[in-house]
Image (cartoon, rainbow, N blue to C red; front, side, top):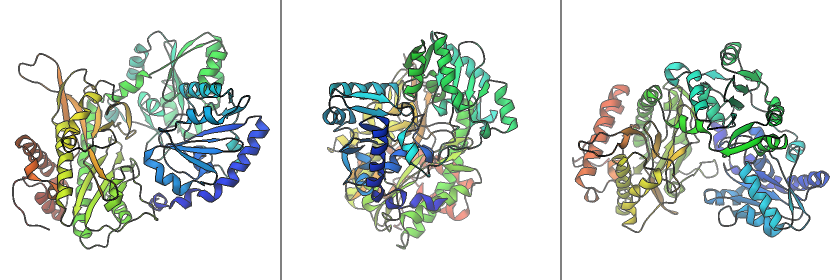
Length: 611
């Protein structure tokens, strides 16, 4: 329901609950024989979106952000968040109970080593931490003379009396015309990538979904079936899914590919692999430490590294790319209808951020193909637009007035996932706004036009988007782009355009292109299109070259462009992009939107009266 997305901070736990719940947790920890406990914002798969019953951090602290960790000791407790959530944590967490710490400036491992004492025991749930995280926490405890202890059951689960039950979203088959490759063929490709291991334990539900051509409904915004799988070097795979999620038809289809077992059989299955002396590959990013520990205690060898399915999934095939293009045409038409409506209504001064979010989703629903939004829409007016990860609530909702309005949104369709940001002028923009917008646009165009040799990583081209800002002594603090899935996660790895983007870009990878600029307390700017890596033929080239095809179709606000800052090649790109937007979307929208679109996609150097 839409209304649930706009609850105020106090509605989702609130600081009033913190003291009582921490006191109850401390009693449970004393009974368990430990001094403290680590509560991550995580489920058993390290998902970005987790089911309600896995929101233990929210339940304990009141903090509802998508990333964070709390540590509770006998006489103190701390909540660690990153810079996106500093203000939110102040509003939500009980600061009389929790010290608020920046997860980068004062990492949890440093806090542990400084606040634990000799002989003390710090508990953790080995289902909710990766092997690397356990190693780091263990080292921090040893530094303090303390011990990290795996608990057999999560103490919060025992005291969270109205904890929601695990989700039972029904599993569906991803149809062949969207998947483009049979599950059997994918399985054989994955086997070839095992590199000496006896098998691969698949803990990332995105990889489970892609490999077996299934989708689910267990979490918000991403069509995931929560479960695990084991892919042996030879023989039938085993899938661990709750049978209640499977219709007879889906069960029969999956049963032809793999053995089907209940999730509670997984630990015993891994223990048996260990007794056989198996070498098993685990995904470093998502594997629960419980499984690697179980395997090695039984005599097996855990090889923790990158799941090869992740990279396979990242390179989209022809069918997936065709679906992505179709999804972006459909989504572009819905977005154009919204932008035309917004342009007419915003000038009246009656709209709020929530009004805009509801309207945009209504236009997407009108396509008849929307499965879900791909993330909670970011809709920021004025100073709220300067918060890159702003999420509107009833308490923060602003009226949209003269200045900047930024909307970052996306959709899940069966044939593709979208993510697009547009920055819109409400009234006449200032010269400063136009300068900053144009510099961001120049960076966006630099990425869109980039040509680079095979083997290039996202880190090597990240600076292209920043140069126009750097020349003015400016920058932004997020990456230029993230990977995007095929009717899967809107944030997909391992590829990205960022200083940390070390994965080589290959044809078929879909990424966002979203440079920005943020003037704190005043306004923010971001321009985001999705792009796909494609081969680029250059006459006389001595190396295999790549470039980007832009997938997103939506006008860029020309009122915010300072023509004097644009060079001829940039102007040609923008005019060509707008001509394509107009040609593709015009047949898909109603006549009033078509007329509006014609004006919004005019040539940059043409003239038009102010609106």
